[in-house]
Image (cartoon, rainbow, N blue to C red; front, side, top):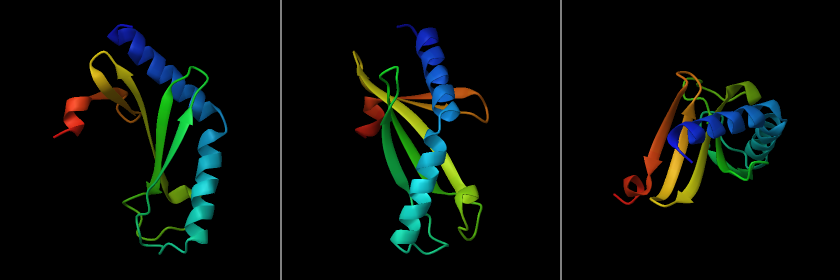
Amino acid sequence: MNNQELTKAVWQDLAAIKKASTPDRLQQEYNKERRKKKVPVESTYQRCYPIRTKAKNNWLIFLLKTPIVQNYRGTNDISFYPVVYYFGPKGFTVFKPDTDSDMLFVYNGHVFTR
């Protein structure tokens, strides 16, 4: 796959994830876990959920309390950070789509070994 095909596949996969009930289900699970573990409302509790899409891509969905919010009150205060990763000819590669700027950040394996 060339860069354009990879970029298109990542954005299509992200759209499919957001269209499905996955984000809502994960937010409810995160909220339930926060209450169960009695995490303080001012704490930035981060949780990672691995998922695999129909296109066989491996995603990590990071959920945490939005940094701007002082006290966590519910699912409206959760930040959603998706990343997709794979092992290619250049080694470990991570793609981080930024929905605010419509940019796709790419991190290769050598970044993580430093």
